[in-house]
Image 1 (cartoon, helix red, strand yellow):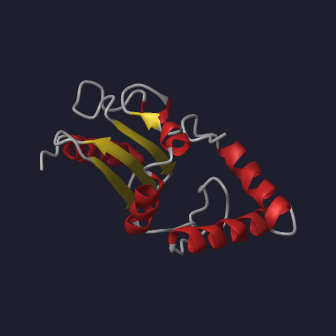
Image 2 (cartoon, helix red, strand yellow):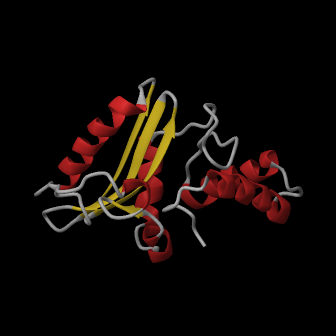
Length: 161
């Protein structure tokens, strides 16, 4: 079961340790992170810096392009896409994007630290295409980042070719 909609950091930390125990020779965060990095490299051809399961470490890092590469390859996986919060309806996006083109048409995953804010996912655009997006913002107060990200997601949802 994927845990994207409730965005449970404790589950994510436990899950990465489980990955290490099952596939990495030990149930530690470091072993699980090594498993995750190896899988991301072999399955998706990307090389993010993964040091924990929740992404709460400021030393975790990737690029928007790497995230969009993964999203593009995962777009046909209904279990994954179904695990994402729906704009204006569920999870961490329940109170976001209400009354906009994005409500009910965009799915995503948020990530927030004290000085970083991310929003990634998919939108069914006005032109009928499903578009993947990744907005990763560092050195910004999330209070200021969220409205900016909302406007960018609205633009993606409103894209008309």
